[in-house]
Length: 120
Image 1 (cartoon, rainbow, N blue to C red):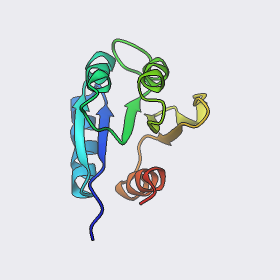
Image 2 (cartoon, rainbow, N blue to C red; image 1 turned 180 degrees about the vertical axis):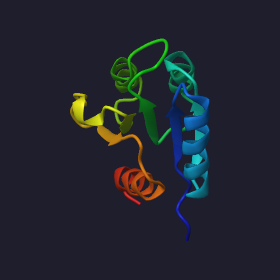
Image 3 (cartoon, rainbow, N blue to C red; image 1 turned 120 degrees about the vertical axis):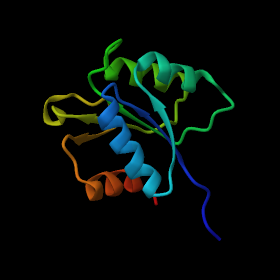
Image 4 (spheres, rainbow, N blue to C red; image 1 turned 90 degrees about the vertical axis):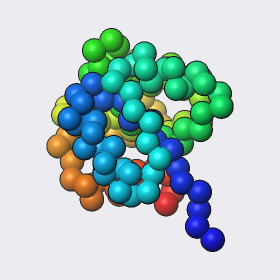
């Protein structure tokens, strides 16, 4: 029996990068929600009817720091896994229990990271 599709919230202010990430995740049979900034992401996170299995966020967002967004997400959804995507991944202090992937990443790296976090 196939497992239900996981839903990933992608928070990325660069529309081209966001589109590429969304395309890859959809190819991997994930359902994807898109947010261009922290405010849009919080709208999804505050909607208790919206299933979200993973939030993937850029560190640098136009309206708030990705770490701040992650901290707010952790309050709203304490069990939500969070994956930071950053060109400065080696330099960011990822809060305990959260994950990071450095940009640029390959499709295989993204797949392996997401599947690893979601236990697929």
